[in-house]
Structures are given as C-alpha cells and as structure tokens.
Length: 391
Image (cartoon, rainbow, N blue to C red; front, side, top):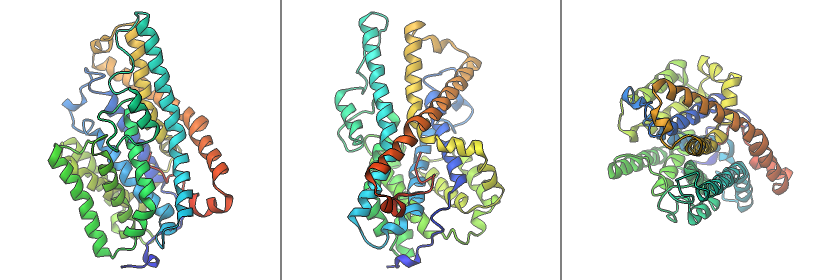
C-alpha cells in the first residue's frame, strides 16, 4: 500500500485548458452523431468514414476525463480517509454542477410533449405524445437520476441524460473510489487499470459493442471513471516526459481518429482516448497553446449545455417540420441541403448552449453553492478548476 504522500499531483489551481477544449470538440461530435444518419438520411457520412458512426464513443471520453480531472481537483481531499462532511460537500457541489441544467432541459421536453398533445388533439400532428419512452415512470427516473439502475427498459425524454445519471452515481462513489484506488501500489493500480478496460472488452464481446445506456451504462461509466482515477495517479504530471510532447499528443489523437475511421474494435478506442488525456494533460507545447485559444475554451465551457440541449433542438425542429410541412420533408433533402441543415441546427445548439450556460447552468451552480456550502468548506473541498467536469 502506497501512502497518500506518494500521489503525483500538481498544483490544485492548474486548469487543463487543452482538455477543456477537447471536451467541447467531443460534445460537438456527439451532436453530429445524433443529427446525422436516420434524421438526415441523405447525409450518409458512414459511407466515407466510420468516424461519425462511432460517435457514441465520445461519451466514454467524458467518463475517462471525469475520473481524471476530479482526481486532480479532489484526490488529496479523499485519499487519506473517508470523511462524511467532505463527501457531503463534494456531492452538493457536483449536484449543483449537474442538476439545474438537467432539470431545465427535462422541463422543456415535458413542455414539448404537451405541445404535441395539443397539436395531436387538434388534428395537426399524427405522432402521439408521451410514447417511445416519454412516459411517467421514465420521467420520474430522470428526475431522480436513476436511469441506469434498472428501473427503465428504454431511453426516453432527453436520451443523452442517461450518462448524467450514471455519472451522478460515480460522483457519489468517488470518495470511496479515491480512498481505495489512490492508495494502491503501482502494481495493483496497473492491474486495476487492466481490469477496467477488460470490463469494457467483456461488454463488447457480450453485446458486440460498448454502446450501452440504460442497461449496462452504469458499469460502462464506473469502469472508465475508475480508469481515469488510476491514470492520474500512475502518471506524474509534475515532470512530464516524452509522452506529453507535441509529437506524442498528435500521434495519439491521430491514432484515435484513425481507429474510429477504420471501425476498429470499439473497446480499444477508450484505451487510446485515455492515453490522449494523459498526454494532453502534461503537454505545454504548441498543442496546448492551440487548444488554449479563447474560442476553444468557450466551446469547452459550454460543452455540458451542448450535450444536454442538442436533442431538444432536434426534437423541436422535427415537431415544427412535421406540423408545418410533412413528416418526411427532410428525407427529400439531397446531401447539400442536409449538410446545410446540419450546420444550421449546430449553430442553433451552440447559441442555445451559450445562453443556457450563462442563464441557467453557471448562476444556478453558484447559487446552490452559496446556499448549501459554507465558505470555509467550499474553499477547501469544492472549489475545483473550471474544467473539473465531464461535459
């Protein structure tokens, strides 16, 4: 057992700007993954590359990044002993980060269903409301953030929010995971890392992929979240070596993109993503400077809002199109029209996400922390770097 004093951490105030930027890029790629394909059948990006077809894997990047960055921010807080007071403060801080926006978007989805009900009863819409997973029990599961605990059998409402439910469970377990994992010897941590990625391999062998949500989504999250914790402990960011050079970063990012492009076994992609996170975190070269530009930081800052709001934009557009034009209108678009529509919707998502961050996400988080976290405790345990979040 290695003592907590051996944890190779850097200053708590350092922010990983490059990882913030990459988080924004990842959230944008998730949007493209959900908007292309079935919604825009003429825009068949998978005919040219499997990169976008494997867009679900960026959620795995979020899970890995979450464990890694939260260990940077809070690892020392929980590595010595379990403290209920600090765990409570940590949980409130994480809930303040997740829940206000989640509840806001969920309320908007509920309002959208009532609009569908009115239009359906008036004969202006064929699609029935409150179906296809948009049911009361599913809504309550989303309210309670228990979408991945076996209470529902299909994703509904804001589908991507399943990962927020899984992460909330991971956050509750983080003080225990940190205490257990951060004090292991390097050998046992290496074995824990192998076990985490072996668990992903088991899911992929069992189902043919790791794109699991309401069924094995929690296991998927915990495996990668734990891997992120261990990775932070294993690698010294204080004295980065060749593995954090610009060449290493570019090689790992290129390998990740190429593997997705060539449709490599999806359980291997999170391994490359994990190595990319570690390499980027230690980089102080041209890559870090390029990713630290203000537009990139802005994209990363609003990435959680991007991730949470993009399906609402899609469903709202579908409702407007189905009501005013026809349910199959978009299917008659050619590739150029579909690409233009994709760019338009992406622009709407970015604008809405900017507004949500400044009007809901950030002020609500600050208000909850002011109300429930004492100033002294907040400074010690819940004042994390600006990118100590997943999305």
